[in-house]
Length: 240
Image (cartoon, rainbow, N blue to C red; front, side, top):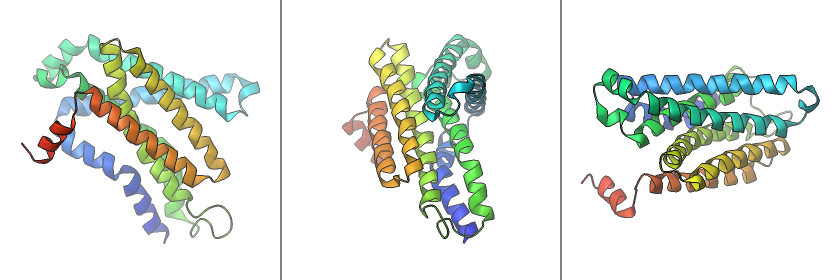
């Protein structure tokens, strides 16, 4: 049962991101480099967040403090990623030999956002998946909820998708000086992170509903941000 639970949760959390990587990134070396680079910067943001949490000893017991610090630093690094990609666009074009990638802001935002999301989802899920795969038995037999693993996997998928969508909206906001988009990304990130705090009360139905709603709303905003429309979506589905 534990092996089945492990693979089920793993594919729920990372099946979609894996498909996104295989179909949209794996064929381009420059995209792979950008994805790894953005993942590294997210790790750096996590390290700085952990350091700040560590030095403020009186606030260590307040999870909300860690959440606020982590979200704000991640958004700061999202801005740093944008500036670095903007400053190095000429070098990236020479390296890639293809300006369609390096001059396409939505593509750069998508790739770097997916890098943010994948590494964030991995850090959120690795320990949980290890417990799911190694046992003992199935959670919920003695204590806790038997929905814990599947809920955690769903949250991991949500954070991967959200980071991707947030990046598209955030990059567009900076490029077009649209403060509303930037503010939305920060607030949406804060709201999602605060929602996860309710999981300590095992309110999984509520937290999942709110988080999935956040994903859908953010996805629609990102779709609209890059010029998407119902007509274009129909043409895409019809392969026109």
